[in-house]
Image (cartoon, rainbow, N blue to C red; front, top):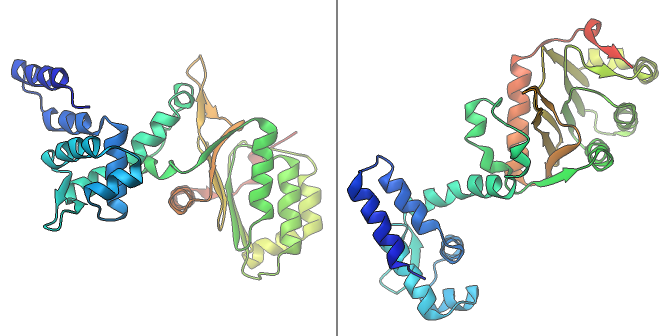
Length: 291
């Protein structure tokens, strides 16, 4: 419901000191309603009149009319001559920013202990692409998801993580043996001092790993350090952010991940992997730590 006291307060604040963020604050003010957001998303799907909005959203006509007036006055929505409403260019663009706020709002507890500040700015600006992912927690559950990504791959597996559990090596070895797609590619990036299991060399030798490297079926690179983990196949993806420790040290938290199959989420993971790959150096076995 429209609150006159809120509006008056906002006006008084603006009279006391004109802020460069005045217009932005007013936009946030108008978006501060679950019903108005629902109206915007509904109109984004299809042009609607008041009756349809009321029916589809389960709201009364007076409620919808009151909120439509506010959305129209703020320039987010306009009206056709036949009484249907549509999003303005301003409205469409604002709505495209909502996923970022949604993702951060839903995961604010997670990001009280984790950070994505180590990301290049161009990926932070696209963080809303992760909104349709699911937060998965727990060492066993995370491990199961990673194995699932390896096992369900059809065209490729791209991976960059700070340590390589033996079961993941076994999964990719089994996949490389089983896959019928001759163009299948396994590409991975490891940090210079990644921890790897001692059985790794034995498994890779049995697979004929060196031959796969020569054929280009397997590609690998190395970076000095790795603070964001990404694993994806042609349909699934996951990203692991670093945890902030009390001594301000940050390192990838492999006990939690954001997992998804949403195209926007997958594209974000793929683009970030390719970005790191492009800036990585040649692989060097010498720095790996066997455990």
